[in-house]
Length: 368
Image 1 (tube, rainbow, N blue to C red):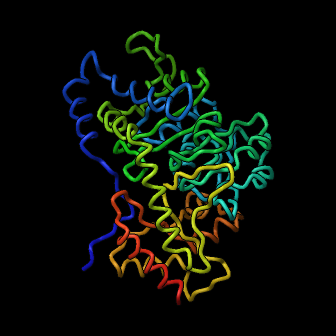
Image 2 (tube, rainbow, N blue to C red):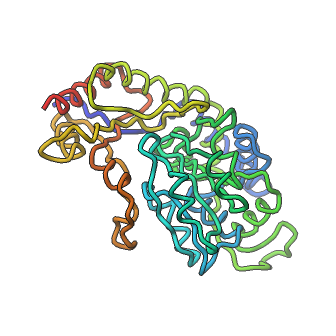
């Protein structure tokens, strides 16, 4: 049997081992939290924000940020229907209502025109998810939103840039993921970033069981949460952050290889190259032209043929409103595109031969 091609895995080497070993020897007692603080400061510097708060997950970062904004029961938060459930869950945790709108056909990100239709007096935030590293139309969203905060879900967009600024640094706040599948990893973990001191302070308080910096020991002023990152995770994350340019460039190189290998295949497109944007290409995708018909959805044919060749692949996100805990929404692009799309393997040490194997399967499916 051919060697298995995984859809993703991290790139962890000697530098990461050294950082974690140093943490295990030193980050206790008086020095507890020192690696977390260092990671936060370095990440904020890289992204270009004044503040960063490390968390145990991107979900936690989003939950804290929404809570800090005052999102609560009776409020509505608009987001794209094409999303992972982690973007919607914190809205529900706080008793608010997620309002799912359609995506744009060309970027697969939230459609500003649909956002405009969905805004009501109850709308208290809009979440712009930079899907697979693709960039949302932030200028259009800001114009439509007015005083309504734009939140950037940049979980998949480390290294992506919008008009010269890093994704996550432009909205009221941004959140990032360091899950093992992401461009940089801390095993699990997330980061909240903002240029608002008040918002940053509130998130820190909420993340510390409701205790502010000046609180008496064991004396929370409000009921909070605990989404804290560990020093061990921060040590790994710091090492990865030192290599972020290299890792983002590797992602771009993998995408460009696929782009070259598939350039002559008709009726497909890959992640867009948007004017004024730089895509981090976290996850390469193939989308089949909707006019190109098979006897089964293209997604199923891809999965079937990849499995035969011992290749992992991921499906495009299903619409959140299609899940049993939500009410179905009328978002035709989101419901259509997931049936004719597939995420491609993109781990760092993929060889060109590995990518050729993937490309051969795509050509086989498209030749039917």
